[in-house]
Length: 90
Ligand SMILES: O=C(O)C[C@H]1C=CC(=O)O1
Image 1 (tube, rainbow, N blue to C red):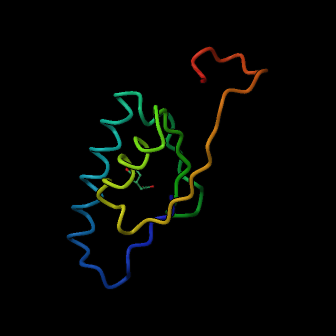
Image 2 (tube, protein in one colour):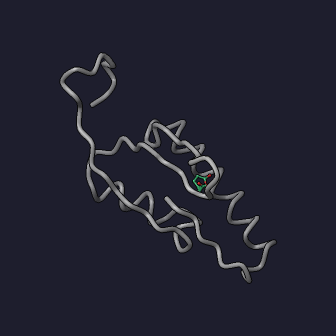
């Protein structure tokens, strides 16, 4: 996810959106839906791993994120690697 807030966007509104985004991201992590959230060093971008049942569920999650209107999102489907030793990877 690359976040692209326009430079002329109201900074107070941007901070509000970031705050609500953080609450949502942390709630989804606690639910186990947002398994990993990593900052890409030097960029306002992240690499995330979601654990969802369907593509529709993923779409519903990301498209309702508060910062969604300002994000470019690329999705790469992943499945379990046969050599993985992590039993909870699926
Ligand atoms: O900061 C970001 O990468 C965008 C977004 C994803 C989680 C969150 O709290 O904000």
